[in-house]
Length: 478
Image (cartoon, rainbow, N blue to C red; front, side, top):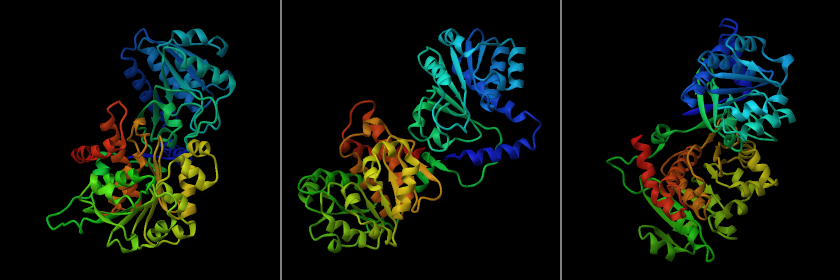
């Protein structure tokens, strides 16, 4: 599992470690890892041209010491200090001793245009807001050059704790981060600016609970239900799907498709699209008597394509089993009814639905995904899976680590994809996973299935559902 810690936690760990090390040793560790990453990216160091964009903080010192290491290996290194009077003195001295040069910001255009690599050491993890005008000009020059751009710890101009980008920022091909990932490296929009991320271990002793968690194959494999010798369809769990309408029967079909591949032993469908469901999936148990009379289930999924059927949503929320609320169900669910539930609840909005629930703009949600998912989880007392370019999952109440989904593809932005995810995660709820685990594992499998189904081309939601077994096998095999 990859983890990310907030700035205050990282700085406290750095202070503790620096108190036990000789002066400057921690920066040298970071610079050594940074220089090695730059060398790997370039393939050959001797004769390469490297430009360092150097701010006044420790990131600037890291860049200078790394530049000195590259200069000693034969690279031509030019540093561009943005605040010469506050440039890290030891790092600048080391660079000059190694044969490196300096250039004023106003003279940096030529070196940047000729560079093979530009190292961004402008702003550290404590930066807030976008870059100042002089730094933004250099970032734009680097972006328009042929050089590979490497960010030190975090691309300058993005916010480490939130993933927000409030103005001009460096767009990196590679970010070399130290000690631990920072939340902004895992969450859009900042993640888009980071490029590939390489973690350099510098020996930090970090506390148990991180700010963010990103599951990997092994973590998901441990969560997935596996039937035993004594299992039958009821012991494996039954998931109820209350979805679809005369106008949107396809939502029911797709939610059932996801549910059938999610680990539960049986799927009960309740709603007006029973004929369409049975025509595609005859193994489904279909009822038109409403959720209260559908028979025993271990979890419900309600809302995909439901239109204005508030009565069905209310019946499902009254059930004493885990419930996943999606799509129209989010709009129809009463806040007090959700907060009053004793069984687990998982809400799965996309950014537009989350914005409507919070009374803010969609742009505000997309710019601050972590704040939005925590606020929704606190307001509803429910676990929340916020879908999007970065899917994030918060536990009920909004406290604790937020899960960040690392899988997916932009081709998943297609009609019905969310219905498949709802059925899949709901089936995992019925199989016994917690709301956060069901949402996290469901999103992981769904994203992986999307990659497999798309393979770089447009894909339909039904194809994503069909690819889930392959994704499941890939995860289990490791």
